[in-house]
Image (cartoon, rainbow, N blue to C red; front, side, top):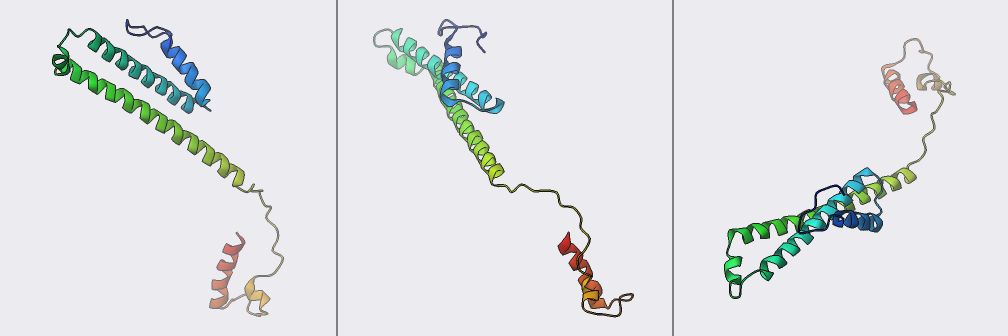
Length: 157
């Protein structure tokens, strides 16, 4: 971004300085947070540009012509530009906060999650429910026993 052309309203190193200051202040973690911090820098640059433009409009106004300047279409466009710059700044800061909250939430969730170890399939230690009841009809289980068997299997899985 530092190789963007400079206008007559701003020094060429202004954006790089803003970005470096914001990177040091916010200390972004990861590419997504860095990208949002860059957007904050661009929005701040736009806000500073709008402030310089406003100052130059009023400084160059002839005596008594201020009302005429405020009524021009150019000034109305300037006000929209200024509002958009401020809105972009607020949205970028809000997005950075949301990214940080998501990152902290995911980190906390990973720390709180139990470590699941793969379990080996063990041989059943007890016979199925129909046989445990002493039923001699192991070859032809009763309807109640056959219904209990899938439930028992589902519980073990």
